[in-house]
Image 1 (tube, rainbow, N blue to C red):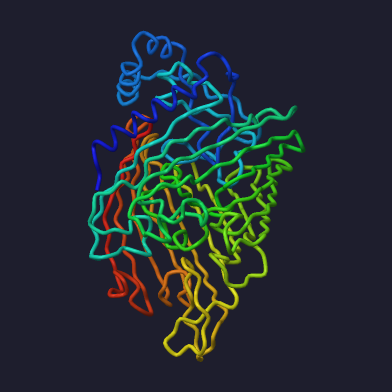
Image 2 (cartoon, rainbow, N blue to C red; image 1 turned 180 degrees about the horizontal axis):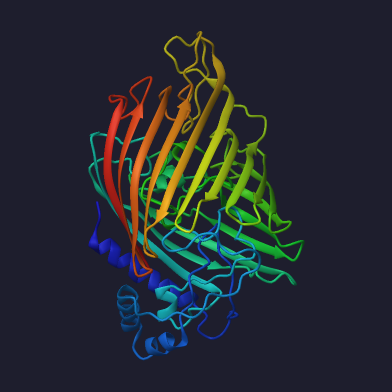
Length: 490
């Protein structure tokens, strides 16, 4: 359950950590950077008059002053920094990103316009090495009593929880310029119930895979970026990365709403390896990578060399974006989360207020152990990796899944969006969810900003499993859910 003491200690520790790492003696250059993993790049930097006002008090007074002016809407802003390429298609806020998303790279050509309360209070709002984060408590009501899964990430019904508390330390490569080499790095510390969906085998994974702790700690993203002036920009990311395809992300502010689709709850999340992202022109971008497999460290048993290849095309108007990916490609034989993953994403902007985001994928594994009662001589399943409900009494079988997803969003104002999500997943052999059935979910959601530092995201949602009872530990066919989260940025 939530603890005021935990929140206070978390914020105090992050402030102290930021002070230790901040460029207080001019060690780090003071120049604009670029965004990370599709994070917004359109928010304007703070005007000089605001910096001057914030310099007139002690650290904690400056923090309070920043929030007071931010929430009152009186925090001055300077013009947005220059970008290279086409204009961003969306406003952010209220949307989580200004650009159409692709993972495992900064948005090449987009500047870093983000300003954070903590760095501002430390007198370094424009530092290229930044420390920031958020605290994200959540509250939900559900008709299920023991488990909301495969609803994610709010798997514990009728609870007030700490979804995630996150601290970022990063330096962003400057991809607006295309004349010289630059570099960046990123470190993440995450604590909360959401670690259950970010865990990668070999990274403190005993918390979930062995002890099944409700809350846990996970270093979700740890990487370096190497940027080269090749074509319109080449970024090579090395380390622990987000899985390349998809609309949604593990970190709360990077999503339209509080909960995730079933499609996202059942596909891979992270990889450890390298991904090269080459922007060929304003319309074309390609990605290629090599990793140890989905959600597994290279030093863990079951790691397999796995390839990634993606191509992205944006129309000249930037009203449409198409991203096709093949991810985690290898022999496809049963191993820890060793799905062969083929994903397609389409973004479309109807006009200044309306846009949609659609995704579909197909995944499979080969020679998955049969966990049916009539299985003959089935091999033992791997801890943390489900078997399949095969037919015919065979020892192993082919286990495929496919899914479709659509988000429809409307901007109400510069602070508010409303949206509707519909989702279909067919877990044909029950290998991803533990129940061989088709699932649908429909969610109506709203996201509202107070200033630029607080987000409130209420939603209502209805889930249904069609062939077998897939909810509340296999006792219900349907589930109604209402909830919200509250993201406090620092």
